[in-house]
Image (tube, rainbow, N blue to C red):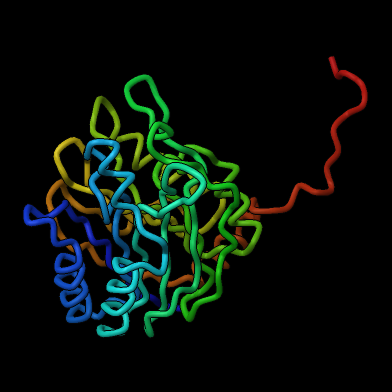
Length: 267
């Protein structure tokens, strides 16, 4: 099954009108024959905002922001993946990705599990972690899975998606710039694709401090699309039957439920 994917490599608009930004990219995607349009992490609210304002701006998944984007998807007949700062009545907001179909109907919601807590930033200071993996959904293009940014560094999450039959795993991201960070981004996208024999899509912001360089890796780890460091719509047409070819040639994506740990230490 062939599908044309659009990677909306965006930065936050100076006037703050994110919905107009989404509309602009959706119109271009439609004119270029895109079937599925993917936006990066932190689309709704800049992570760099003061924490109190960031939390205050959070909305539910059926709020004004999400509803407006669903209507854009329907207006242009696009499947779409977007992110928002989701209100959490029990604490800090969730970092959430939503996939909607070409009628604007929500088909899946994922809350980021692995928050970006490092030596220079702590996402958990303003965000709450999700508690569940995303179950890949059936689409006209094959099974689609979702994860977000830092999740890319955790191979078990991608393997769980592969074992659930995922054909295309999508990572909206805000991949920060820094020494070897672009190389790590491309290597990790390719690694998740190779070890699970599926397509892996990564879409990153291009605001100051983020790398852009959105990409699609095929089941053999080849980058079949790659963006630059500026705002642009990157497109590629892929054929998900390539996953079946890879699986038949080298079936590494197998279940390990038949394996047991040794009861005695092996020396």
